[in-house]
Length: 191
Length: 70
Image 1: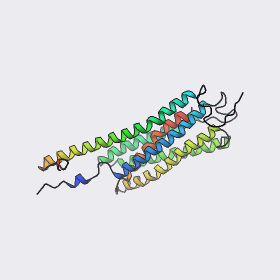
Image 2: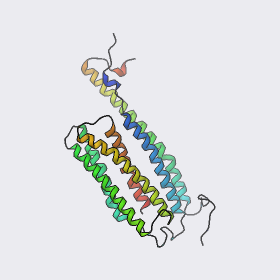
Image 3: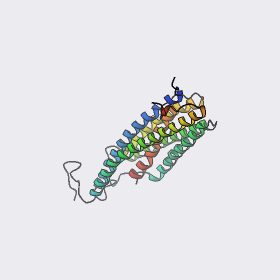
Image 4: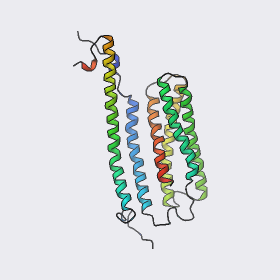
């Protein structure tokens, strides 16, 4: 009789939730690369002195640095939380919760920024900068909200010590995508 | 003087946009290759790590590692 492999051998090398999210993230990265590419070419072709259009508000790069810091810190906290979670450390749940709250803060601050820009006259139709800004930053915001929902569900499971399946790991992969994509968008669109 | 172009890419190759077209062509071409390569390499490493763990566990248990079974 040949030796039987252990049940461990049937465990997937990478959880299906992580692999599925990775494939989705690869597609989404290309979506943002396409948008940023169009933005870069459009901006390079703008006649001198028309970007931004005179009379239109400039993007608040300084204020957005705070949002950027909050989002990056959120990603770092989640990374540390994952390490502690794998070691069954009790502090992991609080780090995951803090990461989620910082992400929520990022989305809220972005919402406030949009409101101020809209009231200052920068709209989707006021200029090419406005159109690209709301499209690129808006799509990132939608991804951030989606990732926050997934991360929130995972955080609830972690807090209740009832983590099932690959939800936490899949949500992490999606959140890291949101976190890593933002500095590229920030550097390209706001300056 | 402002010029009006018939389409969004009719200005391709003009001074100022040429570098942008070249740079973005490079980015759009290389990004998917880099990502797919990165994911494939990560999966390969994860698979190798699993095989090693399985072999170590099998050695401790005194059985044959499943990865060596045919």
